[in-house]
Every structure is written in C-alpha cells, then in structure tokens.
Image 1 (cartoon, rainbow, N blue to C red):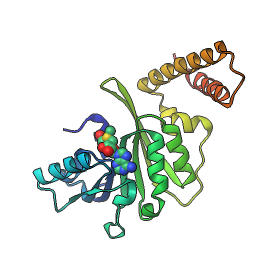
Image 2 (spheres, rainbow, N blue to C red):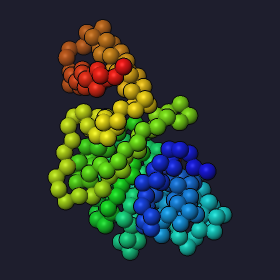
Image 3 (cartoon, protein in one colour):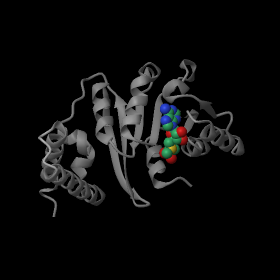
Length: 230
Ligand code: SAM
C-alpha cells in the first residue's frame, strides 16, 4: 500500500511507461507500478548503497526482476541510452536537489517526455528549471499527509517556449487556480513565517539586503493570493 503522496506521483505515470524512479529507496513506487502493470519496464536508481540494497531486495521479494532493475548511480546516471526511458519520477527530496539532479543529467533526459516531481521544499526552483528547459507543467496536486504538505508537479516536454509569472512559479500555475483548503492553509503558514523573518531582520537593524527584499516580495505575493479567500 503506497502513501497517498506516492500514489499521486504514480497516478501521473502513463500506462505502459518506461520509468526511471530516481532516489527510489525501497523502490516502493516503481514496484507498485510494475505489480499493477502500469509500467512496461523501469529502473530504480539510488546513490546510497543501503537504499539500493533495499530496492534490490524488494524487487526480488516481489519477483519483479524482469520489469524492474535497481541501479546504484548518482541521479540520472542511472539511465542508460538502451533503456528508452520516457518518464522520470523524483520524489521526497528538496527542490534544489531535484533541480541539481535534472540539471546534471540533461543528456540522459533526451528521450524523456514526462517528469513527475515531488519536492518536499523549494518547489519554486523546480518550476523555474522546468520552464527554462521546455517542460510545461500539465498537472499539479497538493495534499496533506502525516502533518506534512506535499506538492506533486507533472510536466511534459514541449517545443514551444514556457514561461510562468512570479506567482505561478511560487504557488504553481494549477494550484493557484484551484486554491484548495490545503493550499490556503499552507500559504497562511508561509505568510506568518515570512512576516516573522522580516520582523527579525528589521529588529536586528540589518541594512536592506536582497534577502529582505525577496522576503517582502514573497509576502506581497502571498497576500495577493490570499486576498479573496474567506
Ligand atoms: N523516492 C522515495 C519517496 O519519495 O518515498 C524515497 C525518498 S528518500 C527521502 C530520498 C532518497 O533519495 C534517499 O534514499 C537518497 O539516498 C536518495 N538520493 C539522494 N540524492 C540522490 C541522487 N543524487 N541520486 C540518486 N538518489 C539520491
């Protein structure tokens, strides 16, 4: 039984996909998709030996060796040209790390049509990378589970330029339209956090910095988005 978070990530993997799940840990996600015959073949990539062994054990316990391979590799180096991977999932890491993994593996992304990403924090930097690399966000979900809020971003390769406003980058173009209860709760918390940070900087009488300006800009964006929410 997958967590809701991973189930949503999996729901964006198209039937018959050739999948690379990067930072797979126990390979729960690709193993579940393979068991349900949702993927035709997959790689579970792990950079750390312990989680890699977990993935291998899970794959052999479920008898999935023909459809799923664990590989010990850093990021997208887990993908080989012959794999014909068309979908990459990266879940449960910070946005900057996800961005770094995508950035350092652009060559391996050549045949990849769809990215399904679940950054635990720093979603904005992931959206910026997607737009700059011609992946258009096609769906997003936000959900709360076990006291955490998760955002899942699904993006597809496009040939037309992609650009998002500052608000779309921060909140997510679809999440911003939807303004679900989980979204509103998250941004009320973020507003408080940003206001607290600004108050601290002002109390410490630090001279205006880029940091302060960025925090103030974030506060204005959040206030704007929450303005018409009761
Ligand atoms: N994807 C699973 C999930 O969402 O439940 C596991 C998430 S776990 C918190 C993050 C995993 O990413 C760890 O097992 C870690 O070893 C792996 N990881 C971190 N950096 C990585 C990299 N550069 N390449 C491959 N795996 C990486």
